[in-house]
Amino acid sequence: MSKRKAKEPSYIVPALERGLLLLQAFSKDKPVQSLGILAKELDLPRATTFRLANTLEHLGFLIRDEESGEYRVGAAALKLGWTYLTGLELPEIAYPFLSDLRYRTGASVHMSVREGTEVVYVSRLAAQAALSSNIRVGSRLPAHASTMGRAMLQDLEDEDLFELYRGTRELAPFSPDTPPNVVALRDLLLKDARNDGVVVSRGYYEKGVVSVAAPIRDGSDRVV
Image (cartoon, rainbow, N blue to C red; front, side):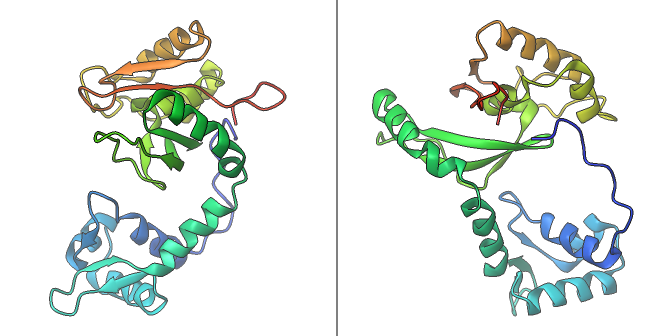
């Protein structure tokens, strides 16, 4: 994984960029969106937003409810997501180890990769117990507020960490234990490093939830 943000490319197709940003406006918390809300969120004219949504609907990336006129993500977007996940070799390689860990602990086991300031869950083995996490494959969590995120940020030097969060004065709080800024996050990462890289959190992202995470390293001892 790259430690630094990718530089802004020299050539960008604005219409394509706006279309992809429109798709990114949908999330687990906002699975259905009206045209007006999308236009407001993207800061675009309603007519432009309609043309973008209509094109994405035509290609199967959006589905429009005929009664309400609201949109939700279509199957074409899901296909792209699965293409991304199946292109990763790591989940397949890690499956036996994740399965063994679930057997030994009786708890749900997850694996994720870092994309910038977020972690993306690429594998999930649910616990057999009645209580199990509701994290799904494809879920995204902020790296600064998740146990897995802390595990995968450990390799970053201070300058790389501050570059990653450049322009961010305050980090979004999710619980009283979420670090309020990058300096506090850096201090937590130093503490984790002294614990052999194992991260233990109690209510770090969600109050009352205890989780443990450790980074997967390659042959050169770098976090993958």
